[in-house]
Image (cartoon, rainbow, N blue to C red; front, top):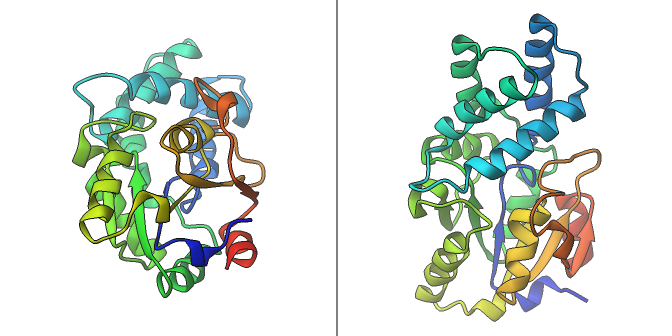
Length: 234
């Protein structure tokens, strides 16, 4: 049984775990599809985005996240057989600044940070994460972004950097708990590193639940929200 008292630091995936990005992405793409005469469900569009994102984030040198979104938009347009709309492409590239936090996040992170260090391990650029932190009303104790390490999870650079940052303040990896919504990008790599991990399986969300490595994920605890996690472990 996981107990918060067994950990000195809790690291988080941000988008999908703390920031509720999926409905906003689906809404944007459904409006785009309607204008272009594309017949697709929200789930169809989300999965097209997820496949594109996973492929594009493997490219090296790594792109900043706004460029990842531009390339995703181009790939989605191609998937559905329509030319990419340059104006909509640019709007899509700025989307992270508008994605909201889940309703349980502000109080949950405040409650948690009173008892442990908290960290963000995010496949995002620094400017977008700054906007999201304002929505969450949080200042993380450590921050590792794709922009900082030049790579995207599930590549191990995020975890290696976070563990080094925590080791520098005297926190061993055995005292670190990782929390994520993405099986592919968070739970499976945490397993490989021997980290205890919690899967926040947010209801009716799809991103990160399939793709390379997702079937191998073995969380130590599965919950439906941050609030539920804190009730169980804390």
